[in-house]
Image 1 (tube, helix red, strand yellow):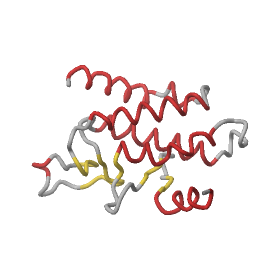
Image 2 (tube, rainbow, N blue to C red; image 1 turned 180 degrees about the vertical axis):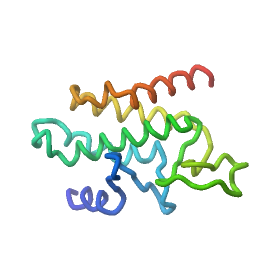
Image 3 (cartoon, rainbow, N blue to C red; image 1 turned 45 degrees about the vertical axis):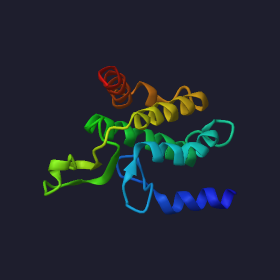
Image 4 (cartoon, rainbow, N blue to C red; image 1 turned 30 degrees about the vertical axis):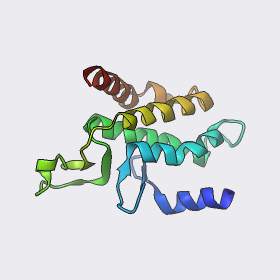
Length: 151
């Protein structure tokens, strides 16, 4: 089982220069909010201080990076559910809502729910992570709450 967990990380995740983590969640190299949260959820238990040095914990870097990347995408467009790693120039599929980072512009309630779920379980393991008080994450949570109120 441990070989599978680490193989999955090697094949589907990328720590980006900005400290976020991009997760390829299917045969198309996009990051779906729901799927990426579900895919890294097994690693959340490994983020607790008791398992690794808190500074060099690779699971913590992975999960917090996914949360940051998801928060970035939610701030970009909370109605989208799949995103590209890189900004896409203007093009022919904009009429479908596929512009900028957006790969699929279909609102799905569970996309935001999985973001909040990942955030919650990470908080249970690492409650003092500065991630929870960052503007990026606080804004994304507020945006999702506001979106759910509208929907």
